[in-house]
Image (cartoon, rainbow, N blue to C red):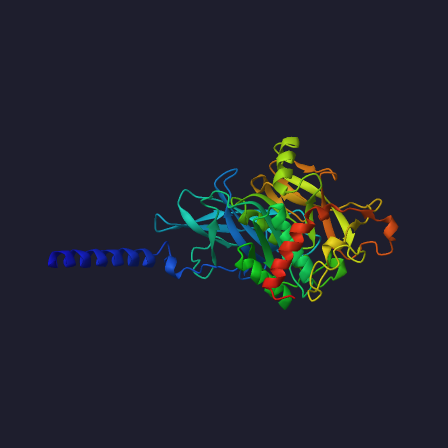
Amino acid sequence: MDNMKGYLTVLMLSVIFMISTYYHRIPGKEAGPRYWNISTDTITPLENNKIFVISAYYDGRESRRVRVLTVIKGEDVTELYCRFYCLNGSKSVPVKATIEVHSKWFDFHYGPADVICPMPYCHSHHISIHWSDIENTSHIPMFEIKNLQPQPFSATFTVCISTMFGKQENVLQFIQTMEMYRLLGAQKVVIYKNGCSKAIGQVLDYYVSEGIVEIVPWPIDKYLRTSDAWYPSMNPENQIGYYGQIAALSDCLYRNMYKSRYVTFNDMDEIILPRLHKTWDAMMDTLEKDYPDTAVYLIENHYYPNTITVPDFETAFPKSVPGINILQVIHYEPERPNTYNNHKMIVNPRKVIQISVHSASKTYRPSVDVPNHIVGLHHCRTPVTPNLPQTSLIKDTTIWKYNSSLITNVNTVLRQLNYH
């Protein structure tokens, strides 16, 4: 017995020594992992506030490299270095980066850029970014390299909702949209949250507890003057457009690249609505046969003015719940002449390199405009052309295919939230 106790004591001391040695060894001039400045924030400013790091993802589709998603001040950032922290030795390895600026900044001073870092031949789980090749990086934030070990898909469809901000109280439409996503086949909805009303916050909490919603904090207005407009001419003092929407979409793309078979990009007042099929799954089976080896399926937008409603389903939900009943919004505006009609997307994320709001700016495979008779975007919002008479609108009752299930499911949620 005494020999066994002695053996266990020696073994325990050995383990403690090994752990202590690992956490206190110095790679180059850096402290060990225990003391590294590892950032867990969604948006991390570097010292000069000209670079904001969102996240770092391994991207082995072309070569062994890490893609660091950033927001930069374009004219001031021309050279960057990556530093990898090797696990199997006592060193960190600097590498000169390539900066791939996204094509659509809408003329703001700050916008998204991918910092491409070729991986050295060492095992590294963390990376840092700096504008010079310095050796002492103990004061610089480090970032976990994600997607190093892709797992089997946990979802067939993930919905990316970018930059939720403001204090809207449209609870009913929000819940209806979430339940439509579920009926159509989404297993996960990722929301980049800057702010919301208390009522919407309670709905978000419910869906988080259900395992449907993933909230990504998005405090970009803590660092930059943000705009809810598309162009700086609308407010020249602002530094980045629409609460950094494209940077959030980019992160959602890479965050779900190996988690979800498809990713959809649309706003909270939009539903990608199949016309020939009942679910996204059935629709995509058809689209993949009709358009093989496609990266991006573009869905044509239609504006359904929420000021034009029909009496159908007026009493389907409690009067106490605030917001628009989308089952009553079944007319959309015709296309405006000489005006580009925007699209939203369903993508194969593994075939996309850079994403924008209405298209993918860089892909490995082509995009396709899906015909309107197959699917359309039900965009329920204030009218774009307010003076159009109802007789000029196009009636579309596609959403009524789901009315029975939608009413049941929404009322179940409203009871959980104590709306009567």
